[in-house]
Image (cartoon, rainbow, N blue to C red; front, top):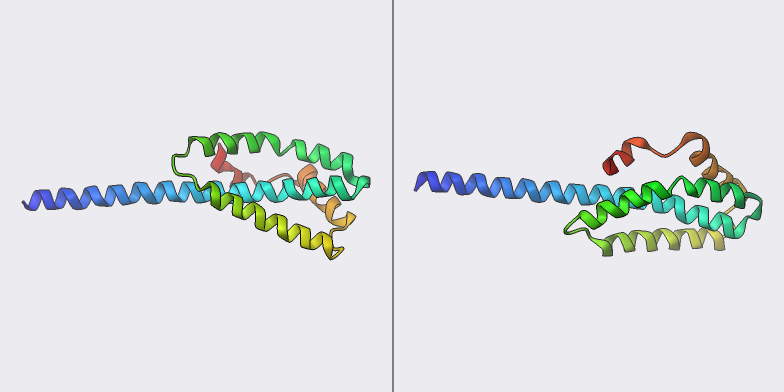
Length: 132
C-alpha cells in the first residue's frame, strides 16, 4: 500500500511537471507572438501612414516572416495553445497603436526607429530561441 501511495505521488508530481512545462512553453510562444506582432503591427502602420519610410518598412517586415512561419509551426504543434489569449494580446496592441495614431504620436521618427531596430540591430535572439 505504501509503495502504491509513493508511486501515485511521484506520478502526480510528474504529471504536474509536464503540465507546467507545457504551460511554460505556451506562455513562451505567447510572448514571442506578442513580440513579433508588435513589430508587424507597427510596420504595417508605418507603411500606411508614412510613405517616406514605406519601402524600408517593407524590407524590415520581410525579416519577420521566417520567424512568423516558425511561430505558426510551433503553435500548430501545440495541443493546448490558447489562441484566444493570443488574439486578445494582438487586439490590445492594435488598440494601443490606434490610440497612438489618433493622438498624432505615431511619427515618422517612430517608424524610422522601428525600421532601424529590425534592419541594423535585429530581433532579440534570446527571445526567439524558443522557436529553434
